[in-house]
Length: 442
Image 1 (cartoon, one colour):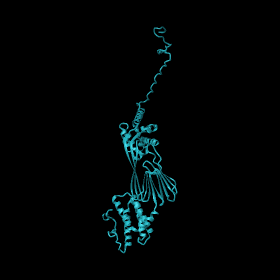
Image 2 (tube, rainbow, N blue to C red):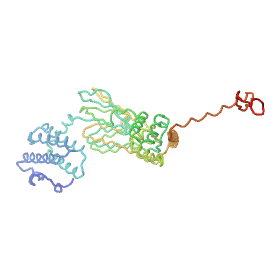
Image 3 (cartoon, rainbow, N blue to C red):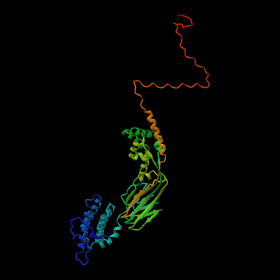
Image 4 (tube, rainbow, N blue to C red):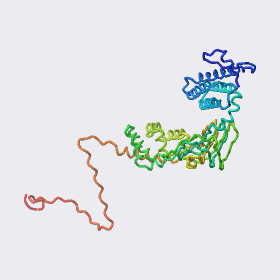
């Protein structure tokens, strides 16, 4: 624990009021001085959390703590239960500070103040802790795998459930004041590009070629509309974490868990590893979710190397999207079924039951290689469509009259038709004249 003399404060409180030296027991003003020191501690917490956007909840909890401290004389003659509001309020401050993202120096300052407050409460709260544990609520925290979701079913009851049943969970913690860091580590051996859903869709290919030849806003909107019809979408059910209040006397039954932790004030690091041979990512999804890739293709498809941009975009796909398109993983759906008497959790990645717990769920994805898949087939089809479109739209020579349509080729003579030689074309004679040398009129 760092020395309190190393910390500086910007408040107007004088150094005499921040003297944290324990008061000797022979002092006749032990109770009053202890109360005054506790008030100074609470005021320090209120000052340090004021005017900070990320500590608003902690500041509100510190204000309520101060109200409880001011409303009670913390003398030795009080019953242990009289200190329960102060204890609960102090725990609320600590819980809100745990949620805040703090620098290391700020964390040390807050921990120091909370420690001093606990020391000043001292043995007066020692007897109250056991009573408080019979009344303080406990919490259920559930996390799904990184590639899944939580599906919460049932209605929330006005009464806190008094039992929890977990089915085939990866990690179960039934303790208090613990931190669980649950990591889902995925190793994707190969990520391959799939273009078939795009080049097998005629309207989508037509819209893509039209945009390459004329990059207008209308053609861009048409392509986006065609891509939205073929992208791989799935309905998402719930989030990836669940937080629910339980009864203080809640019982826990863990069926077939991989790991169970029971010790209070523990820090647990649990890693679940997934090995996937291949993830196939559709090109339609790549174009739809990365509009910048469309701009790159428009600029380079006719005269550049568009495959380079497509490979680069495939390497930049978010981890969550890669997991979403992996067919080797299960759906990862976690069920939380609530009732008036209990909660049943199925297929969870992490479960924590108790008070003062903190669940941190994160994922890590390693990608081995990136493959083009059938990109060459898509490129061949697109270039054929571009050539056909350019030939069809080749401009005609300008003139007053349009060009005459070409004459159709002569019909071939059937092989079974008798051959008849064609007679030379001879103009009929004029009846008013006679040919010379044949006779007639001269």
